[in-house]
Image (cartoon, rainbow, N blue to C red):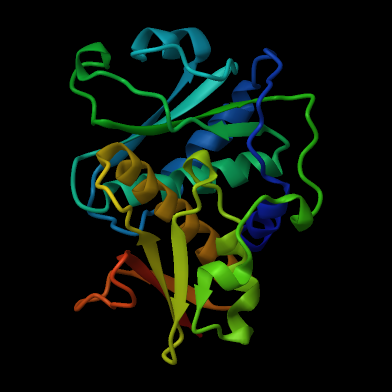
Length: 255
């Protein structure tokens, strides 16, 4: 499954128009089963998810979602360090699973749900994406991506890991800010950092932590496709690289 999902990274894109055809119940059951089977990088953090039709999603949101799609998937987690990265990781795995099924998706980082409007006793809302069928085509070539050049996001470049790192480079991010950079070392590790803004902005940092989890999912899938048994770990002491970068996690490339 992982090699198959890694191939979907090229096809995946953010769709902006959706048909309102309902999704088959069997497909939704497969999605629920797949997402429920995943283990996030920090497994002890409690999390869950909801799948909601558009009108139910509107009732929860502080403002109407920007994309009218037949269904939304909401990711939730208890408020702990790394819970945002967990949700990004889990959500992107679900996105790629759906891409393989020719289901269109679009991350919706601007969706906001007030606690008073949310389901009673639910875990805090983190992020969501829209899903459904679209008349737009899926992406066909890596050249269609609007991403920073490889040399701008990868440091201490180890050529043997380039196929893995390229998939990290292609990861989506909120407003395409591309906050993540990757640093390799001589111990078969890829360290993931995110850029620190000049001025603190909690909303932006929240989104960038989710983006880092998305990037980790891409790197893990790329490493598995390359024949490794990767493990996502947060090392102590934390690796340091540049002052304007915040350490997120490391992909350990175990044989």
